[in-house]
Length: 350
Image 1 (cartoon, one colour):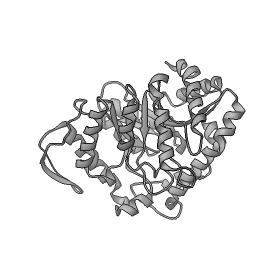
Image 2 (tube, rainbow, N blue to C red):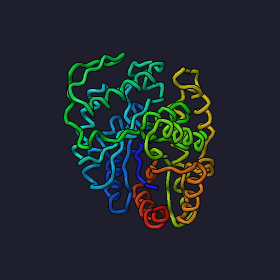
Image 3 (cartoon, rainbow, N blue to C red):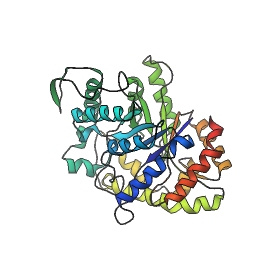
């Protein structure tokens, strides 16, 4: 199993400035190579304290590339619904060059109704925009003189620059929440998948569907699965819980607030059951997240057992992408947690 960092800003100006948040994130990023963390990831969200400090993950990852030499840089994820494929392909090629070929590109459909409303994009176009966007970006990265006539974006005989440093292109990841079809599609198409256990889906079943679709499509191996977790490690389990409890509870409350339109009557055929998913998240807490294995909080020995048990429970996954400075956790606490986890937990899974 590989371990990486995910930076998901979940604060607004009232809690912490963007300058402070990203300075701290880059400080923690600079520890990755030394401590053995294999990847750095951040999101694309807008307008709300839930992720809004990160409207363009490529900007942060370009800075992260200067603080690391080995860690992979992962968009977690870019949103084709709000981006022109010509712009995305060019930015991807540029970051792949800046990082010396360390970029991996995660794509997501987006799921927050307020973002669609502000961009003037219909929720009912989400799937179509995603599929078209991923296909067009892939073509622009792997081919020259590309022509596409799409429902949303069209272009003729264009060669995207810079060309990717990795050939034929950087690896692709597909973000999925709890919809079985999303897992199957990613497997059929031969993409890695990034998912979030906190949403409460039957992760073992969903990963099984992904692996099955991967094999049926004739792709070699079993694919790659990345799962996201909150993590805080301390020698004193009581202190670990005390430090992480309220920041995680505030993170959950912020997520539900950002996605609140699903609870207020918004519906879309492209997002079946999202009212139930968000209602389920509204009932979550620090205690329930830790109990189900979505939050790794405690002393090193307990985390080794918890991680091993969850890994068996879901049938295995390749990458754990961990939030270490979620909400208002202090950078000194996050760094101490990272160091202890690297020293006493990670070696047990190599």
